[in-house]
Image (tube, rainbow, N blue to C red; front, side, top):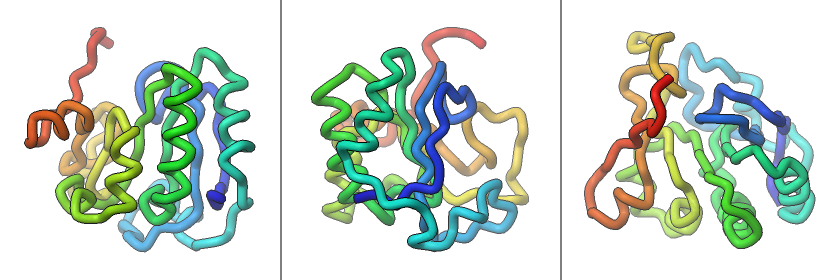
Length: 166
């Protein structure tokens, strides 16, 4: 089960192209200036099963997927199960937003299970003093767009590069 605040279909702000974004409830980072402070409280969303969420995602054959919130890594086990099913049933890319650093997630078993299925991780807390509205798919300049499969393969952080120009 994943506690979900909202599901947005065909959004274009949480990664490239059209995306189905799953906004989860619960975040302990509580970044000052967060654009979604209503997502901080745990358990305030609707509990949804992997099957329910998978059907929502597969019903839109053209949209990729984004996990956001809140912070999906506070529900890493549920999101790992969902991500595994998404990858098994489709060719959709998965982006995930977190206030944790990639390096720290590598030391957590549940987080590693989720990272195994994530294509791009937007990591790091939002920092109001580093806010930049011109940044692509993130709010502050400390946050990174990490190509997770390449980073895991190469043993160092590889930043995601957009394939097509804006």
